[in-house]
Amino acid sequence: MLESKDRRVAILGVAIDNLTMDQVLDTLEAQIAEGGFHQIATANVDFVIRSVRDEELREALNRCDIVLADGMPLVWASRLLGVRLKERVAGADLVPRLAKLSAQHGYRIFLLGASEESSAGTAAWMQKNFPSVCIAGRHSPRFQPLEEMDHEDILARIEEAWPDILLVAFGNPKQEKWLAMHRHRLKVPVCIGVGGSFDFLSGGIRRAPVWMQRSGMEWLYRTIQEPSRLAVRYFSNAAGLLRYLPAQLVATAIQARRRSHVQITKETIGPAKVFRIQGSFTGALLPRFEADVRCEILETRTVASRSAAAST
Image (cartoon, rainbow, N blue to C red; front, side, top):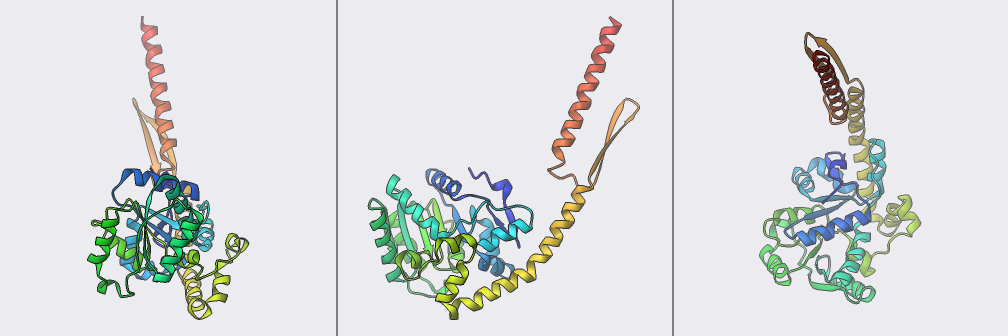
């Protein structure tokens, strides 16, 4: 289903799926058709830096069916690591596309989290822009630590609504941990942690102009709007990247150099052909090894055929 599984980009221990927005939507529709439970995370730098110190969060992210790069710094980091992420897929861009799919195909959406004002504003925005959208329900529980929440009440509301898509706006890491905690109880095919997406759609927070989003300058626009809350966080995230990313870059370079020194040699010892492999037998080396072995087998068969023909 998810063609990027073999093309994930690991950034500080978190595997980011290398998908475009259209590929994400195709995959989510397939997951809805499949049923069951699938967790999707929209990860930015804050997620990744937190996960370095928070083992529970890191495990939750790496158990997700899809982890998206919601932040240009992750796309830039992937380029440094030598595996370029195709594009940024932000939760604030994904939610409207899901509302459109709901209007087209009748997928049932449940809005969980954020304030009542933000939740109601998001529902109103969806209904205004996509009149046929199917909002199965919404709930804004009182803000509490994860361990103090009334989980049974929340789960009962979701089960009664029977949604196809659950959008959880508790913020990171609470939304990721909440979904991971209830992965065996939730019977919702697509469950997505969407962070502050409801605040954007409801108009509580203005998004940066498109050119700032595309150039990776959205953080600056948001900092100007909420300096007391975001300035410290963005500074901490930048410091975290500067602290942890160089070590991964060095490790990646060392691995690449080791792979470049891998050699396959062959020699004939009596009637046998012996292949010797020096270095790490990685996936990149396998096609070459198979080709060499195939070549030797064909050559041996050809020689045997000629000998048999000559003897007759």
